[in-house]
Image 1 (cartoon, helix red, strand yellow):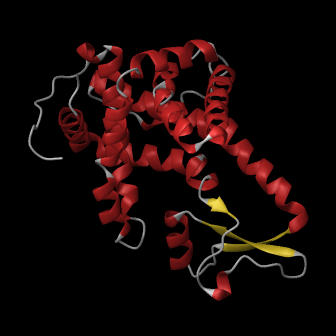
Image 2 (spheres, rainbow, N blue to C red):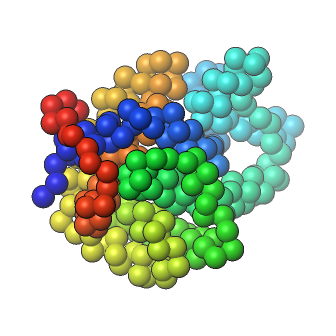
Image 3 (cartoon, rainbow, N blue to C red):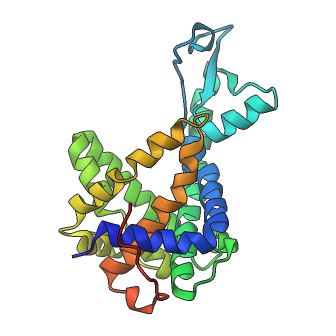
Length: 259
């Protein structure tokens, strides 16, 4: 049985040497996929002037991406955009396509970045784009799309099954980062196998970052972004433990104390 203290200590030790590159990779993936689409919605802010309203057959689209919003605000630009109601389906299709064909593929590249970093004690940010090639790309798109579709369908049944499945399939990006030509069934099946009996502890590992995220959110709403590499490195390390591949990693003197 693995210990989350050990997992996080390993991640901290790795990030002491490679934090800047890890941060850059995480921000790239966040911007290409989840950082934009999952934080972009028809917003209804508290302030009246920023309510989602209809004006001349248009709606106000608010970006819920604290990094982009902070940057746009500093440049004196607005992060609310008026979009015609007729364009809503097109906006949805474009953001969905970005996630499916760009963000999801970059997520696998991010997993490869961390796993290669652990193995060779060296990192290269180009790893995040290494999955965009003719030999791997289509297979990765299919696996990632079906993984997310299954989680979505389980969530429709009820929230709890969706959460359980999200942890059950959590290791899929790491699995296909090493074997990108696996079928969706093979990749998902392997993830289910190695996470069996570990889902609750994975959930607790996620919760252990809550304090860091709350603390980070106090700094202009963007501080929690800097915690992302810590989370990603921890789950990449967990994958190597669950898959039995940690024997080939670099030697690390674990810091048992601390979080």
